Image 1 (tube, rainbow, N blue to C red):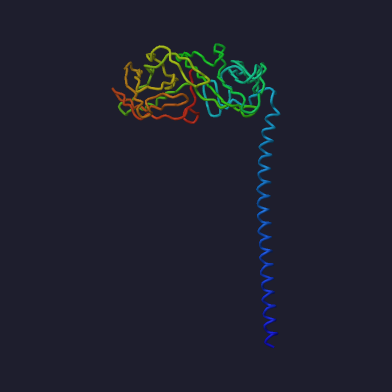
Image 2 (image 1 turned 90 degrees about the vertical axis):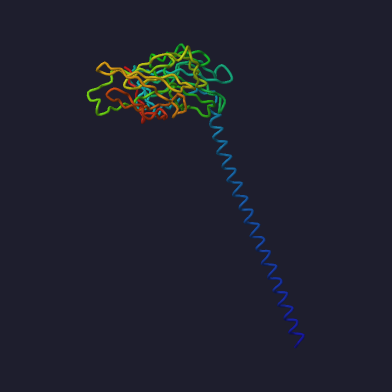
Length: 316
């Protein structure tokens, strides 16, 4: 009896050992399958991602040596006397034309101040410019078209003419067709006058801004200016606004306000609050209060020059 009991205990023990080993084997097998599944899913995801990326590259590469096209000039919210509601249309006759430069390796991949035309809502050129493939070319644009612009993208501009210029550049063309984003080459000063109670009946006849540059050379590719002469020019405001050539350093400038009763007020505008500079594509809002015999200069703020903070510049 004792022997049989011992034998049964050994049998049960063996069975337990066998069952435990089998269970562990199953668990290890399950864990291995799980790991293999995870690796497979990761590999599949990577393959899909790489395949999609390669498809995108192949799609652009398949466009190589096709005509380079511009889908939009990206004027967006910019508004000038020649650009209304984000479109290169307005108070000038169509077609709308801008200057375009393209830099690439090879004659057919380059352009130097060629006309790019918008007539009826789409852009086209009569010149042959081919797409060299993704990230193989650079493009620069200037609106309006300027025949006098140089082959390397420079143009002499007279600020007294108060004509707005828009520029765009894309250092690497990563798709065809191209979507350009344009910006103002000038800075804009916007006077915001109010009248004190004692100044009843007074009206502003003219406002002059002094110590500005009358002319300069705009480098479209670099978005920089080279000044001509000294900053001694006087520019007249229209509707309390004026375009000025940007200045890296400008601590202050004088203004002269002539009233309807013949009185003349003078004031100095400090730019300390906005970094002692006048930047391109920026609008500087200057608050003034006009009293009976004096002008009080208030706050001055700078903001991107877009339509919602006063993009319209009527100079005609």
